[in-house]
Amino acid sequence: MKVLVINCGSSSLKYQLIETDTEAVLVSGLCERIGIDGRLVYKPANGEKRIFDDPLPDHKVGVSNVIAALTNPEYGVIKDLSEIEAVGHRVLHCGEAFKESVLINDEVINIIEGVTEFGPLHIPANLIGIRACRALMPDVPQVAVFDTSFHMTMPKKAYVYAIPYKYYEEYRVRRYGFHGTSHSYVSKRCIELAGLDKDNSKVIVCHLGNGASVTAVLNGKSVDTSMGLSPLEGLVMGTRSGDIDPACLEFIAKKEGFTLPEMVNVLNKKSGVFGVSGVSSDFRDLDAAAKEGNERAILAREMFCYRVAKYVGAYAAAMNGVDAIAFTAGVGENDGKVRKMICDYFGYLGVKVDDEKNAIRGEEVMISTADSKVKVLAIPTNEELAIAQETVALVK
Ligand code: ADP
Image 1: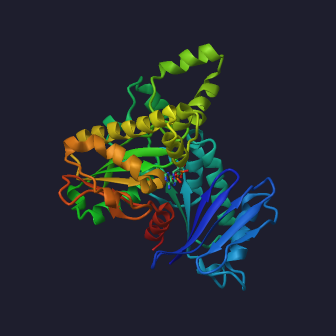
Image 2: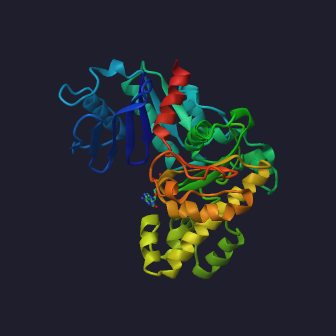
Image 3: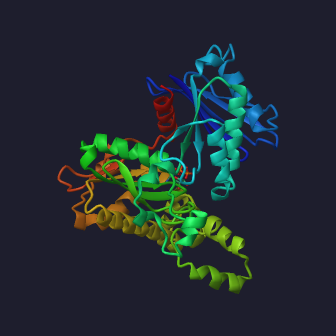
């Protein structure tokens, strides 16, 4: 089945056309600078990359131009629109409404709109993408795949915050968790690759990208995750602080004369390894600076790894053990040094890393030795394929 996967941001729209029977990506690309001027990047698997500079006043024009490129007689990959059998949309949040992906109808759109305050930047953009596709392809089924729904299996003790309970009851303030599509996809691959019995498995997934989170996956289901109401909680990230004593907010705000939104902006955009190192949010830059002896870059990387290790330890406790640990996303897939620094904390779990295998980048690879008590894997995430597969499952 050919599925168009759409991931809409406020001024961008990433897309992939996937043949799910073979898992082949037929075309990938993005619309950028929507509402500013416009740029459409189109990359067919078997052809040359093209860039179009036609104006993109809104997302609907973006989707329309993507369809025009896909069906172009010269460089398109399908004859006409009818070959697209379904559209899968990445959607940030569904509140507590859905435990799984859903077929989109008017009611679903209303529900997503109703949780806009949980993702004021992302959700309006997600909805614009959905509406644009429905207008242009009214007969094609559309599916919403949420970043949060994989975590809806968490028990209450893991998702309720220890604040007055009425804030949960009245405002639904709780841990939701994010990167759900990635954690779901990678935990499934991990169970397969490690040869585990899904119904008797304890897996910890470390999604380490610019945004980063760890999830405890017990018997294939998320039972705890490090991100919370928003993607700010948990690990030290590229520019986000992760866990911090909330009292720091008032203390620093008073000193600097910041408002609360200004303070939260510091935690989201100016913190993490960027804030500590003063160098960069990118681990390749940190590595280069560390090699030159930059102490704050070294510290930032150590803090990042230490925080991941603490979460893995906590989740091994939460599940009363761990069979496999999987690393994924930009840092997790590529940075063997970081993987090694994290795994060095797990001697007590019987983890042993094979240095040769750990040097491999961007591939599915078991990086632990044959006699390691816990299997450790690097597994490239594939959120688009996961969205396409979820879409097919609902449409068939
Ligand atoms: P996101 O989707 O959260 O933006 P990604 O999963 O794409 O993030 O990860 C991006 C990050 O991955 C970069 O900021 C960089 O730190 C890291 N990264 C990418 N490639 C490498 C590499 N070869 N070595 C080390 N780190 C890398």
